[in-house]
Image (tube, rainbow, N blue to C red; front, top):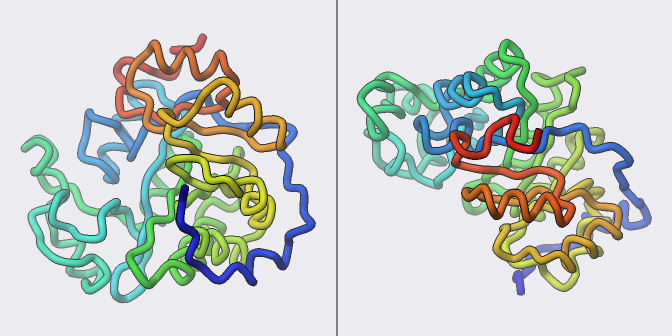
Length: 267
């Protein structure tokens, strides 16, 4: 069971809302971290690779630099996906831009950087892509990150169809996102589905539950759907499992294997 060690008072300001989605405007397939296994994650190159293969939706991670610039990065440190070292939350964004975020993956991507949300928005807009922005706060910056990222998403994706979809594992980040941009759809990311998933999803006005596909069964999917929530399953990398999940009622598959599970995979 997921441990929820947060102050829930902020969540219950809207606890009577039934935030149900009649139409799910998002594609069946989303490219994980931009380009899945085919490009350095969370870069503009990754987003372009996803679009080149015909994907209509990309997922990527956003967090804050020391000077509170929202930019794309999954980890708390820059170690794994760049030639730099150290905690992202302790680096000014100007220093982060000087890091090579592509060569670790392949020399062809040398010179790629960790883009800002604004730069990602401009790229996605030019390519006609829907987005799922995962709010990925560094420790101790959950509410702040949710607030700033949601505010920037509301600004840079203003008026887009479908609207940018926010998600996070952090309830505090989702609370901050809701307070900054209540009109943006939100999804709660979970591994194992916690006992009180209905309560928290409703309190946060979530439209969807984003679940580790290994935790999903036909019965669990039916429960979530009956509660009025849509379902995004991550990270699904085999065609057989993708077909099974969609047959059971999953709305969107997030995958690394965009070469195997492409835009036209489900027809």
